[in-house]
Every structure is written in C-alpha cells, then in structure tokens.
Image (cartoon, rainbow, N blue to C red; front, side, top):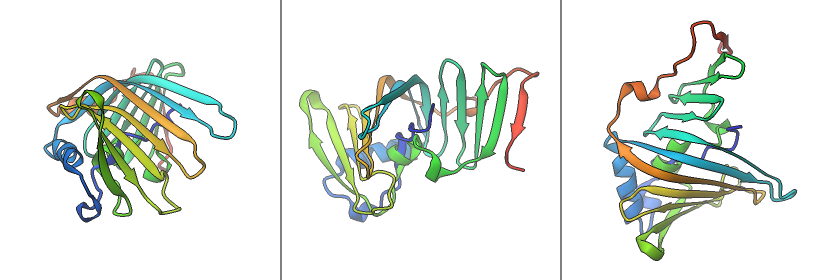
Length: 202
C-alpha cells in the first residue's frame, strides 16, 4: 500500500552548490533542520505510465528530518532511518524490519529534507503566492528524475509530484498541513499486547 509513498522526506540533503534560485527550498530545509515536524492529512496516487492504472492511499503523516510516521485506516508505519515498524490492524500483526531507504518510495524526509548532490533545483512562482520547487537529475540510477514540490507562502508543502525513469507518476497532496514542535511520542507505535510480532531483522 505504501510502496510508492516515498515522496516527502527527500529534500533536505541536496548539496547547496548544485542549487540555483533556491530561496524557498533553503527556507524549507531550514525548518526541518530546526527540528520541527510536518504533519498533514495526505492523499497519495501512483499512475503506471504503461497501463495508466492508478493506485492510491490516504491517511495522516508526521515527518521530521529523519523519521516519519504514516497512519491509515488499517495500517500504521513508523520509520526511524534504521528500522521500519508496521502495525497491520486487520491482522493484529507487527512487522519489524531493517529500513531500506532505496526501497522506500515515500521517504518524505528524503524529499523535503535532502536528496543527493546529483540533483539541481530551481523555483517557479505560481498563482496565489505558491512556489514550485523543481528538482532534476541526469543520474539514470536515481529513483526519480524530476520531483516537483509545491509550497504555499508560509512554506507549508501542498503537493509533491515525482516522475521516474519509466515516466510513472507519483503524486502526494497534503491538506491541513502544519509544522509542530517535536514530541518523542509522535514517532512511537502503539498496538495491542496480544499482537503477533514478526521480526525480520534476524
């Protein structure tokens, strides 16, 4: 369900020397570097360019510079950069595994807080005071060739659109988004005592 949700955390790490016209982008990175957490209701869609088939999901997300938490109707995911923990409510099961950033398509922290130096960034002003931050790479091994992040005049992310090498499109939209102070309990995972625990790290 969250296979193609990697799109929020990717923006913090782009090397500043490769960025042009980056005022809003740098401001956005600074917000995460200050330790604030972005939280929002999200809607996520993935469209296969060949079949035009679209899959989607929605829920609530919390994102900081490294960690994120996704909560949907029947599943909650917490990623701390080292470990991924998933609670499946319909099966009353917890799955714990080593976190693989390359296999994580949501990785919001990667998008909003730092991609690698192969990306260049530019900005376009939009109607209503919004800004579109466009990240592009010519690295054929990159997960996404183009990433577009739309933020409002208060630096609140509104939409992230990503295009991969096969021209598949991943879109994540946010509503009622805001930045909040970090609370350690935000990134904890609660589940019933009788839940089955499946630890794949061993």
